[in-house]
Amino acid sequence: MEKNPTRYNVQLYIYDLSRGMARSLSPIMLGKQLDGIWHTAIVAYGDEFFFGGEGISSCSPGGTMLGPPDTVVELGETEVSEEIFMDYLSSLGESTYRGDRYRLFEHNCNTFTNEVAQFLTGRSIPSYITDLPSEVLSTPFGQILRPILDSIHIAPPGGNVINRGRSV
Image (cartoon, rainbow, N blue to C red):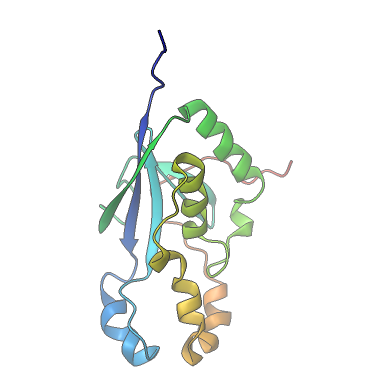
C-alpha cells in the first residue's frame, strides 16, 4: 500500500507599500498607472517568509508592521517537508539572499518570493508584481529617482531574521 505524501498549503501575501497612493499619484509622476508598490511574502508551514535589507526573515502570517496583506493568492500545495524548506532557506540566506545583496529594483522581496514559489509549487508569482521595477524604470521620472531608490533597503519590522548573512 502506497503512503500518501504530506502536502502543505502555499500562499502569496501581497502588500501595497504605498497604501493606495501609487494608484492616484503614478499617472501624474510616471505618466502611467501603477496599482501599487508591491511587497510580497510566502506563507507556508504556518509562517510568513520574506526578504529585505536584513536578509530572509519570518514571522507569523500578517505579523509585520504592515499588518494583514492586501491580497492573498493561493499558489497551491507542496510536498517539500518543512525541514528541507528550512535548509533551502538557510542556504539562500548564506548566498543569494543575504541582506547585503538586496537591491530594490533587481533583487528584492519579489524576486525572493518568485524563486521560493517556484521551488515549492513550480508556479511563479503574478507578472504584474515582478514587472513593476521595469515599469517604473521605463519612465523618465523613474530614471531620475533610481539613484535615490537604489539606496533604499526595505525590511518590514516584526520579522525574525533566519540567517544574518554569514559568509560561507
